[in-house]
Amino acid sequence: MKLVRALGSVGGLTLASRVLALVRDSLAARYVGAGFASDAFNGVAFRLPNMFRALFAEGAFSAAFIPMFNRKAAGPGGIAEGYHFAERALAVLLPVLLVFTALLIAAAWPITWALSGGFSRQNPTPEQFAFAVMLSRITLPYLALISLASLLGGILNSLDKFWVNAAAPILLNIAMIAGLWLFHGANEYETARVQAISVTVGGTLQLLWLIWACRRAGVSMKLKRPRLDADVKELLRLIIPAAAGAGASQINLLVSTALSGWLLASGSITYIYYADRLNQLPLGLIGIGLGTILLPTISRLLSTGQDKQAMDTQNRGIELALFLTLPATVAFLTVAEPIVRGLFQYGRFTPEDAERCGWALSAFSIGLPSYVLVKVLTPGYYARGDTKTPVRYAMLSIAINIIGNFVLIPLLGHVGPPLATALSSTVNVAMLYSTLVKRGHFAADAQLRRRLPRLALAAVAMGAALLAGESLLDPWLGGPMIGRYIALATLVGAGVALYGVACFLTGAYRVSDLKALMRRRGSTAT
Image (cartoon, rainbow, N blue to C red; front, side, top):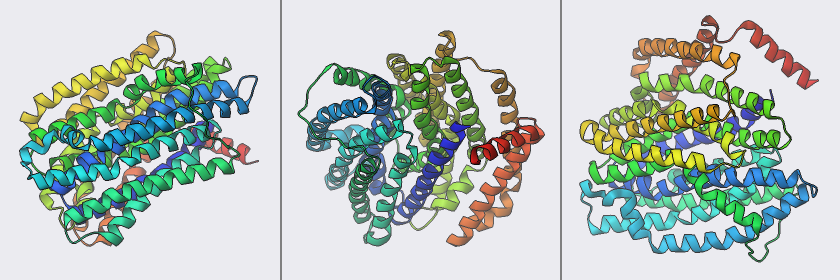
């Protein structure tokens, strides 16, 4: 069960990062609230670095670079040839990033306008819009920092040192928490500026961490003169379609944010942002972790002719993804508002804000299984050198998302963008799955077919129990911080326990499965 062990390492660190992100967002809700300052930071200044990280660091670069690095390392030159390829990629990547970042900083005004729809419904003053542009300029250097970090992280992932790269985002969250806790200003605008500065500080810490980790692992690269040889051209050719293919959900969120700024009132972007952050907790723990592990694993198996093992690995990836995702989906559908209230309803973030954010979270959660499955299915394409098919499907899902926004926003307000994003992601994953099956690159095995309906039934049973018992914890969720966290921990713990029991009662897992897992762990330990 190497996949489970690797996911445990990556997932544990990703979980730590996501928990710290919730602490960060709780502090931001307290000190910034839900208004123009929070919309400017969450919707534009922080949205662009987040999107670029997902598209590049967690998506395009990894999807293109890791299979090529593995092929080089498996060749006659061994790992040294892999490092030589990485040096050539870095030589081209660095100047491109520096020029690209400088151009984005210079064009911050139109970028801010495009990402926010000009905040049309909020009717900002020139000074307010200038403030939003300033926040964007402060955070834009993060793009170059995280892109360089992604190259180093890709090398470490290829060496099976998954935990090092997974730990890097923790540094960003620590920097942002420190900024909010120690340096928050007298008003929301001063605090939003502190948030922006801490983003770039956090990116610097991430890059330094990965440089240090590479040196510890014996990876030493030198800066060389840029040269577009055949390998680098192939890498660049793969990156652009991979960005859209792996980052369709992020592009959809970007479109939704822009339309929200254009069509919705003040605070709507912040409701959508906080709902997305909660939705990202299981996505980060499960989807990104599995995607990080599956791509190098499947590409390595295919490069050595082990096609059957590659398909089995992807079956177990889907099974594991849905085992962990379905209960989160049901929980966000049934008790979203209490969760939001317990985490964010402080200071400037009012009960009305918490209620509206909860509605957005429930809408997002409808697409949570598909968000995760995209991360699990796309390695089946990238490992075979196909980055064009995912991009075609991603473009179609983006078109569906845009149409959905225009249809649903007049009907549902700020709930429309999350629901449109969820529906478009579901269409995307359906196309990815059906194409893999048609090509003979994937077939659901008997174990997967038996377990999935039982897992769904177990998740529904857990949700019904949480909905029935939520009122018992309700008084605690609006009280002091310690009481809130105890109530939330109780809610999560009860959900985990109920789901575990339901999995055995429905037959999704049997006692023999647990015994087999313990025997594997015992044999591994010896």
